[in-house]
Length: 323
Image (cartoon, rainbow, N blue to C red; front, side, top):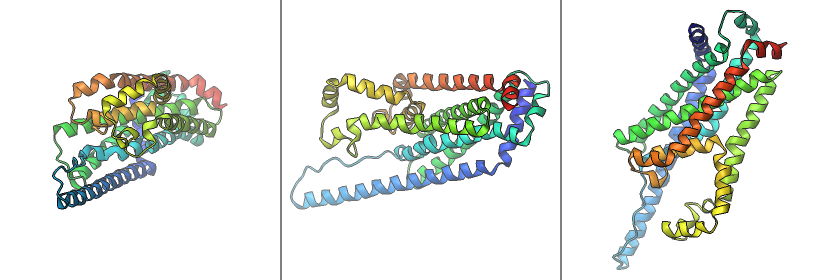
């Protein structure tokens, strides 16, 4: 346990000296603030258009104006979550790759492995240190997003909002740890570190960009801004009746989507934040009843790649690959 903590502390110190971490926090924080500003401005524009439309109706003698558009402030965080899912995962891969590649590049790998450390201490220690780093990153982003919601978004932050942000932060933390573990394992297995980075990025492309895009493209409701059924003014019960005739197709589409860990992360974060309307302002028990399979899969996947990172960073594996 001591050697594990020593390696973790060393990894944290390495990342603290690495300007990439500060760049990552600054970039994601700026992107989150911009996404909140843009979403808030878009909603205000929609609200102004609605107000003008209602004024015209009243001037024409109509007494039944349409329902006003509603936007709960937590929904302004949609863009912030998506930035972490895509760009945060890429940063996690680069940092995970660098934690192994730097040892080889500096020639310190043999020195570290010559010490009496546990068989799995190197990989687990590095991942423990990176887990702490990602904890700092997501907590920093959560603070920035909360401030942005309270100022730009005009939200009243209470226990419900803080709980949603905290749960989404845990989900995104697990997601970043997952990708760092993937990068560590692949880089340790590769004969050359650059090959490990290429393979890890290729996995990222398939899991984060290609599979979710295929699933989204196959969903007919995503082909119209705001949703096809909403544009056609079809009620939720009627929508379910229509989709029941395409259950097989929708099952294949959903299977493609959920084969990506990015979709599990997105659905969990969106549900906890109330970005999806059906979970907005709902008690945690109701959200958890639908979301627990996604949470279980995310935790299991993170645990699995963590074990993989530990198994591929043993003394025997690294010295054989490095020779």
